[in-house]
Length: 370
Image (tube, rainbow, N blue to C red; front, top):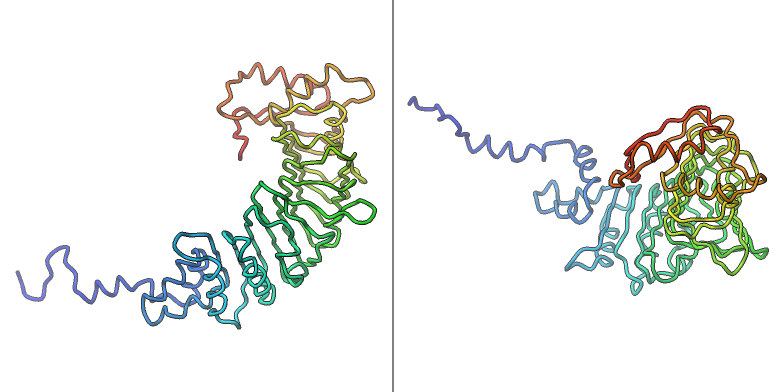
């Protein structure tokens, strides 16, 4: 074999080292973009790779903290926020695994994010947290840069208490899970009317202890309600004032949402609606739900929902009939794949609706979770 020639499959030491450092030769902005998708714990660990990587993580604009073993997440969050480049905005912050005993870390972290132009804030709270005013600094609840907020609380113990109103002028997307709303002196709650940029609202496992919950927002386009828990001690109402709503979803797995919904407007912009309930409720309440969808173009019902409506209709009076759905173009029946239902059974359930529809489109075996 000639000298200077490498055997097949062999490479010089220099070539191997160069290939190993191919990632490190990327521009700094590309590396930071990649690191922003990493959990912060792993991003910080890159500081041991080389001198160039030593301080790179300090310029991250997205920080994601999760509870992990053998490391105190509260202290780790404080250390990372203290050591990062203070001149760089923190656009996205996700916190989970913070316990009540050290809630001061949550206050400090959210205050830091609010003062560094945070845009997306996601927080997962353990069941011990009860009052949001004890956990959040007022600066966070009126942060002018915040566009997306998610508050998740474990569904046990008391729900998380939300202030009477949220002063978040730039907020576009809001998700609240296992919370309760503070009523005003007149017994009503209207927490969303001051969020003038709000486009998407998702409310999960709510505890409603006000006489009337107003979901009022002229800019709101997408509304998703799941398992609203209404107290039985008082007669309550949920009133929509959302004239530009284009998508409405009502999901009731746990059988809590038995109170009527109503609207101050006819929801004339509604393009798509979905109802899924697995528990029997009164016919009049269910028809009240359907009245919200009177102007919808595409209506999606679970098979359980349609079956319940059909059964309830046998006991209905002529004064409580479903709306005519004058704009309806398609009815879609969503079937859970593992349920054994024949097309004949589905068609029988749809038959009840047939006189009210312009066109019926039945989608078989559509995964309910999608």
